[in-house]
Image (cartoon, rainbow, N blue to C red; front, side, top):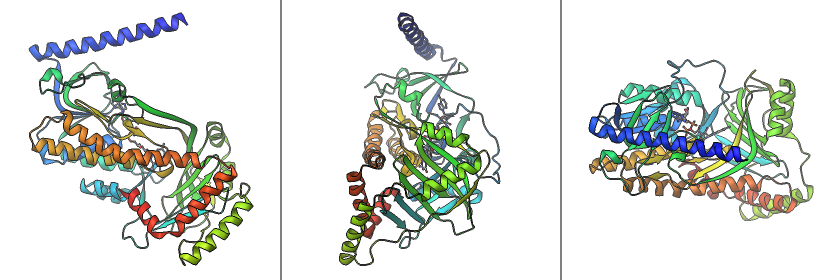
Length: 472
Ligand SMILES: Cc1cc2nc3c(=O)[nH]c(=O)nc-3n(C[C@H](O)[C@H](O)[C@H](O)COP(=O)(O)OP(=O)(O)OC[C@H]3O[C@@H](n4cnc5c(N)ncnc54)[C@H](O)[C@@H]3O)c2cc1C
């Protein structure tokens, strides 16, 4: 125990010394101005969200003469070649995301690579016959598009590189930071953020954008308090082969007491699986033979053993009463597809956590994407919220640039934080509540949620509101 405390104290002391050295190095450089490189904006993290942020700035005339650096710890994969096999990592992109990507010329690149529309969605559960469907009959656009993460990133990087504005540095890991104290957002260079990279390079910047994912080092260095919830579950992903070629444009999600299972369409005969379950079951599902895995997926989509007949009877009576008041409301249940195989080697699992940073900004620092908020994937909102951050941060930085303000000054950054937290927090709370609400087979709860879902399914205007909300 004593040794542990001693080790931790030593570690803290070493980190403190290193940061002090970095601060001194930065301070010294003000007079000698030799080894420290200046930048207007540094984006730490070149994933989908960091890449989109860099792309938005690169295509913004007000930033074309600024020095913007994007750091990405992984190597450059050079030219992207679309594989015949689908990747097991996919995202459902909302219409708002499509609009953002379209504005950057990225959506056109995605269309030339691969994506698949979702025109209908069915959400149902294993404990009762309740369900809800969403259609795009009255809407001109699709509800969402399913796109492989690799495809999204490749399209973003192609457009980013084409603009030739941002200095993209692969194999560059931001290791330690010197962040100005609260309130110190003066335009003097010694109030800028200092960064030391793993290769020893030192940068200083007016604005550091943390797009470095759920384990964000920028968030930790900024000492932002975080709300965290470990779901003690994993999401098992795989690429599924369906029994027949169809117009496969329905997204299916069935809530089981152990977690939701979702099938997202990738082509007429292939869908992407996202199955939330306990860590133990996730391990088991990855280790069993492929045909047993296929049986387990079909069982999870079709089995009736959790059904509560008393609740189903109450639902039937309730639905008939609703039909008398709103004739024709709601839509009938469709049967999910049957899975006949999986793409070999496509199974993987990801532990699930909710992480929310209580602040997204401080002087000269802003967080975007998973660095600011990490959600349960059950509503497919994670990267969509990250792209929403990009739109908002780009907007406030543009306004600041038009006023001739420093991009790292706190006032515009606070506008970004306020606008995004107003949007993100209700989404985060709703998704977390849904996760809790559907994690039980306790009859009174099943009754309440089933009646609620069935009622919502009957009210088309409420469903339109839900679609509009999820699309922004
Ligand atoms: C199973 C599953 C399904 C999902 N489905 C959906 C969906 O349907 N729709 C949806 O909207 N979202 C979905 N999500 C969420 C989505 O995948 C994430 O929100 C998204 O990947 C976050 O992107 P990001 O760029 O913020 O972070 P990341 O993808 O984590 O990227 C961070 C980048 O920063 C780099 N980096 C990290 N540290 C450093 C450092 N110190 N220096 C330099 N670089 C660094 C990393 O290498 C990485 O490239 C899903 C998530 C899971 C797990």
